[in-house]
Image 1 (cartoon, rainbow, N blue to C red):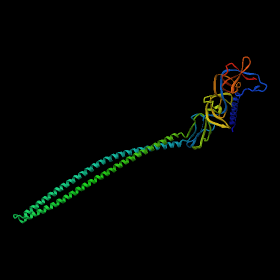
Image 2 (cartoon, rainbow, N blue to C red):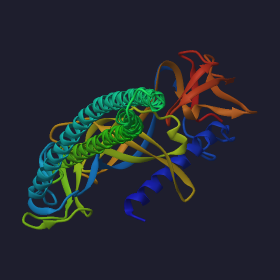
Image 3 (cartoon, helix red, strand yellow):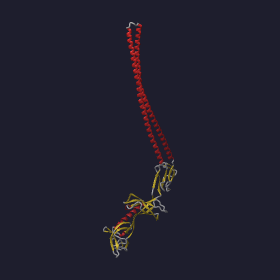
Image 4 (cartoon, helix red, strand yellow):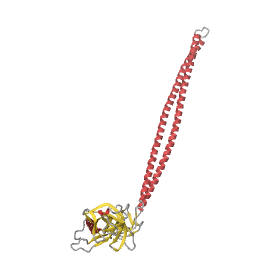
Length: 465
């Protein structure tokens, strides 16, 4: 155990013993013959007074820096500047500075990534616009092709109907002409007035009419076949146009979806590039460590000109703002609050008395040899001509309570009789009276009297048989 801890434990044990002793004084009356054996000292008395009682806690501790920090580097590089152990610094001063060439290259790379991502996004948006235009053209062209195919099919159907009608009429006309020629030939063949040559001519006319009839049928068949073929071709063209239009519009729609997805991907890539740029920007000063307060370097790993790597402890600093850290017994900590005043005496400046205030009370206990204590931090009020250094020993008297305008007597004037607190009163006639009192707060010297005594009463402290 270190010497400082041994002193603290002894101090705490001494205070604990004193606290145990005080109630024992209050709980026991003087033995017959007094506290001093057979030969008692002269009678000592005290006039009950009105005034103030201070409750205090006395302890010891050491000066420490209010803040301390240990830093590691986030990047690597050549050390351009580094404070060394024992160097003093002010808030904002450079503790360690590394070469920033790597950070600059990373920033340039991040900026280039943003430019490339932005160009990709612009290209994706342009492709999307072109896909929209292509889809618009495909839809319009499909509508036009559909109308034309429908019109062609309609016209082919009309042509088929017309061909069928004309063929029927042509065949019918040829048939009638043939039948008329046959009827005339039958009449002429039996006529006695016609010559054989004339009869032969009528027979020839019948053959010609029959040939014309057959020709009309053949020509009608050809026209019908041609019209039917045109109609079938128009219907087939209409079907082909439908599927072609469907394919072109679906292709255009798919292209729109692809280019829209490309825009999303390009936007995500641009966002990632911007985030990366911002992250690198956050670490743009990673090659420099700045002092967070005024203080001193406790340890430093690097020197100017060396190469530094990240992840290792680089420098440890402590503030030049000091506090006193002490341990207080569990019986005293319950009476302490942040802000309470403290009188401070440093061993190095034992003729000077400093002032301070309780800055922090730790809720975490320390148990050493069964003695429970808590850490108390006291803030020191600045004073000229006193140089504070870490580790200096200090004695503290912390005021936990200040009760004003109360009746009080010396603590040794009170004893306990049959469970009641009593004092011995010196009466005007020189006799003594034991009187029961109600007490309040007390310190190492005095105790409050809440009832049972009046200001000016004379109480016996010692020497009474």
